[in-house]
Length: 415
Ligand code: AMP
Ligand code: MG
Image 1 (cartoon, helix red, strand yellow):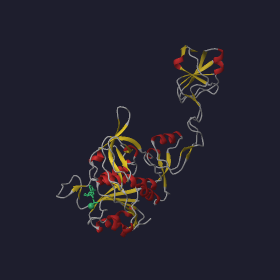
Image 2 (spheres, helix red, strand yellow):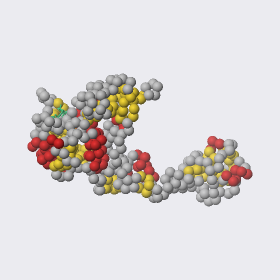
Image 3 (cartoon, protein in one colour):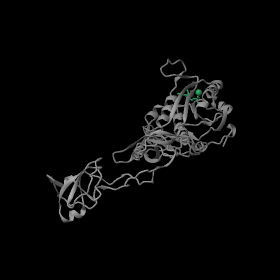
Image 4 (spheres, helix red, strand yellow):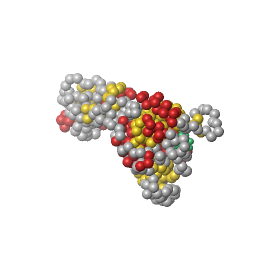
């Protein structure tokens, strides 16, 4: 897999992602954490149900619990008591008697049908059914939702609110998850200036660090901001030496092309091993990945703001996901009618920034958000999807169907 720069294979996006993920062994370290902190974490083990849900037969409606057999004789019942949620009726239900019941309350064992309150009339302690019920109606049976011993949540699941609810319903207040990756993010460049400071001639504000850090956090990861390294091997190396032991991933942006001040690749080679550095994609080429001597994974993302975001979404987030035990699920491709001409040269796979919508007839359509150069961040800001153009594509005409990947389906770019 290791490629030296002069024989470097140019990877497709899918090959590169698969290679990045394959280089990361499945996680081992786990921790038991409170459910309240577990949103977005990855389960380390399958969770078998300790109890069935519902754990007892209960009513799905407010009404009366009756015996079907009694109803065959008469639709008039004497009310013998009540079963409220949390306060079951205790005792036997005499013949031709009913128990008033609320939603979620235990159904008395010797009753088998719930008549909803709307279909009854009660005067004093007599209840009359006005509309024929069906036998067994409105009863939630033991295990309707979850049966004891079945797998409630599989291993390697990223926990969503519904999963946390399922675990809480099992009585769990903690869950075993894989440990989170420690990620450090820095920028490289002599031209970079911290937002909030005065901009000098030839300088620009560093925008990559905040977008990369927040993409990672949006994807459910923790990311630390490690500042800016200047364009020198010594400065980049110093940053790596200072931080490599404390992080599982170090990410930089900038300094990975073949310009005079591009030191990232050489510094990585001197401090670890290079995995590959060319991906046939736009924006995003070139990119560096590898491993530092400390064992930390290294990604040298391109400097242009859109390129760094696209490579973060395509490679870094799936890689960190693999580190934390998540399976990679490719975002679904949907088809949309292109409302504008798209320019493209054959050769590289392109992620063009677009705006997807549904027209008045219910059909999917997409338009470009404007200039597609990799430094044009505002067209990324306006976009809600990528228009995905295959390597051999030479663009698209108005009215052509194109492939679209919604940001809402891409971890890190979702709303
Ligand atoms: P480089 O690969 O370092 O030559 O950077 C490519 C382009 O991205 C240049 O125009 C840089 O000024 C710009 N760039 C690099 N890093 C950043 C950053 N952190 N924020 C904004 N722009 C950047
Ligand atoms: Mg630079």
